[in-house]
Length: 335
Image 1 (tube, rainbow, N blue to C red):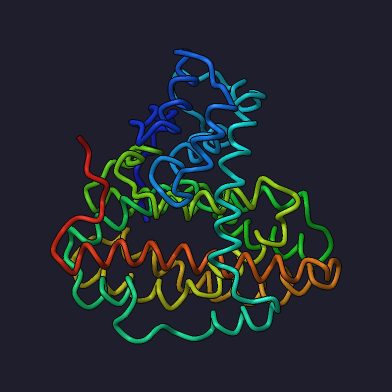
Image 2: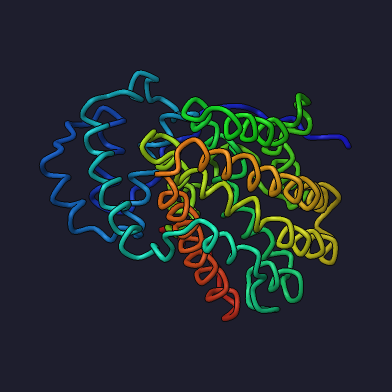
């Protein structure tokens, strides 16, 4: 399969969505100080799942990935920025622990992942059965905030694992990165999908359009991946994604084919049907079981990672379906 040329460049800083994100953006532009005390008060009263806090946190995390145009690479470890990031993380994590925690036992949390949603109730069901090309384009725009860096947030956990868990995680990540072939790196395949849909394939191009609900799902991965103390939660998140992926990917491949989205668009999801079915077995038997064998005290963290993933994906699904079923856009409107 031929693939498009992907130009690698740092994205531009986004438009702010409130005082928190405005303060972080101004600081990165060199337009003023970043007083943690003042922002602490703002963070304490902010909606933990809202646009302002989620964008501010996303910007802080993005400095550990590609960064932003005109922002020095050294800002990644700026002490004032890290203090502000910690405030945002605490607000987000506290809310998730209060709202999303449902299971203490890993088997109970995993069991729910094996139950398919009621037919017709999910995003992939809607796209397969009723989705138009514009719905698929919006879905790709939202998901591009993750898929153009697919597997990168999970790679942070590798140095924090050992034994079976590390080996299993590395095996899955190797597949995500194309098994050594640049043309088959999953982020590259998603860029090909976007090209088929007539979308801009530049990394970070659609950050301003991405909803708070989508930002939160990506921030969850970075939050878990960048903190050694949350390695169990990252493994739980990874299990939730891989185990639940294959059936949804099959429906999305059918949606892409039905609407004539293009061969690369169909291929991306067909690839995930097979790959993620295999990954699910490795993640369950080697990564999750291996981590529990080495560090059984992380069981509740693994369960929390599964629960938090389901909670945020549920919020995103309600955002998408709530808009699409009324004929409106799920994307964030720009002024």
